Amino acid sequence: MWSYLLRRVLLAIPTLLVISLVTFALSRFSPADPVQIDYVENPAAYLAKARLLGLGQPEFYVSMRSLALPDTLHRILPLEDRAHLVALTEQTGNWTATSRFWAAVTAGLAPVLDSLSGQAFTTGATLRQTKDLRQIPALLDQLQRHAGTLRNPALKTMLEAGILAIRQHHATLSQHPQRWKLLVPAFHWNGLQNRYHQWLSGFLTGNPGNSVVTGNPLLVELRPRLLVTLLLNGLALTLAYLLGVPLGVFMARHYQQPADRWLRSALLFLYAMPVIWLGSLLVLLLSRQDTGLGLIDGLNAEPWLMSGKPFWCWVWDNLEKFVLPVLTLSLHALAILAMQMRSGILEVIQQDYIRTARAKGLSERLVFWRHAFRNGLFPVITIFASFFPAIFSGSLVVEYLFDFPGMGIKMEAAFANNDYAVLFAMVMFISALTIAGTLIADVLYAWADPRVRFGR
Image 1 (cartoon, rainbow, N blue to C red):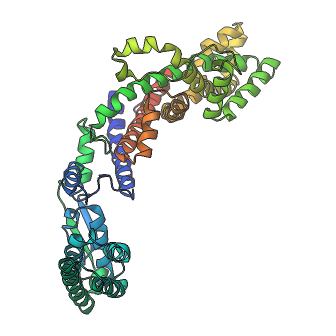
Image 2 (image 1 turned 60 degrees about the vertical axis):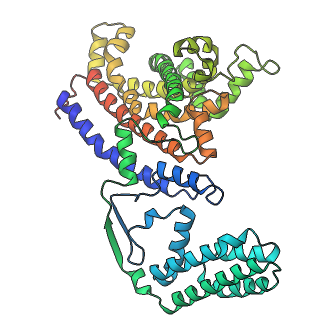
Image 3 (image 1 turned 180 degrees about the vertical axis):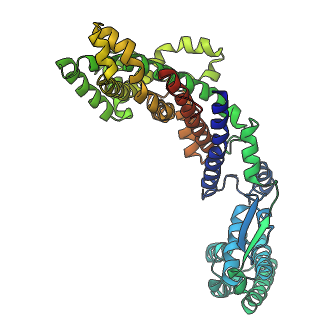
């Protein structure tokens, strides 16, 4: 058994690595700048946070780009300037001339742009932002005409000098294209000092990085809410199994009887209802004073850390707040479990050893619970591998619905604030849960049926 578990754990490692690669790649496609600080207004703060997030390092162990782009491209900050330089270089292939042209644009416009007004400012800002080299001459001509109307001699002189330098570098760039470099791929080895290595190492060492918004370590951000969500899911899953498994056996014992037909219709109805709709219905029926019974106050639980109480004391004081979220999740899961258990029992009772047990004169209760029950668990065990991650994902919606201080509210806030570090840390956690659930399911197979051998 232990050798089997070791093999499964070793097989899980490359699976998690692939998931981490996909997750990291998706996080890089975000169009938003994760720093979220205006570089023009506060360049020192921008650079400090960019270095903290590792934006000045290469993305991966190796990088492939065209020969026109340098291997030190990752060092250029802010990210907006990096993207601008790449867009300009892809038009000519001449990185050296492009970088000099961009330096001339920056040096020529940055000191005077805030002093301009009206059309002069608009033209200067457009020139600073455009990524099309073909528009540069026309914009320079417009800016030249606006410079002639300036009354401040010093400002006029600085602007005209900047325009002249930009024209010269633009002419050099236009006369010396190197477009052939755009067609030649170049591979660069970046070593271990790359963002993916640090990101993955952080997960393995228990330090998966910092929140983009708050700057706090992700463990500090997620651990309090993660404990609450795990407790919520654990209670819901336990309740679903405690009710769903006996209910499935009961339905199988009363196959095609009125109780079986009515319960099956009710469970199919529960299964078809979206979780958020089921939760809203429970709020109307059990929580509202005007439209329902008003028995349970299941909304607006106080966050654990804000209460200043030990965790279990906070749970006890907010026990009523757990009722509706746990009930919502467990009812939806109960429908699946009961139907799967019913199908498993109905399949098992067709076997020869069940007919033999009945021929010996055993009661139906003993036949079902002693002989059919363990083998009938196979469908329930099979769905356990993916059930906990699925109910975890559903709880994020339920927590948002009930304003429950778990991972759901945190996920919504992270999505609204482009805090992708938090979002993708949750993706990795759910992936690890899925693999752990599969491993537990394999162990439960051997418990349910001694004929299962790990060696095979």
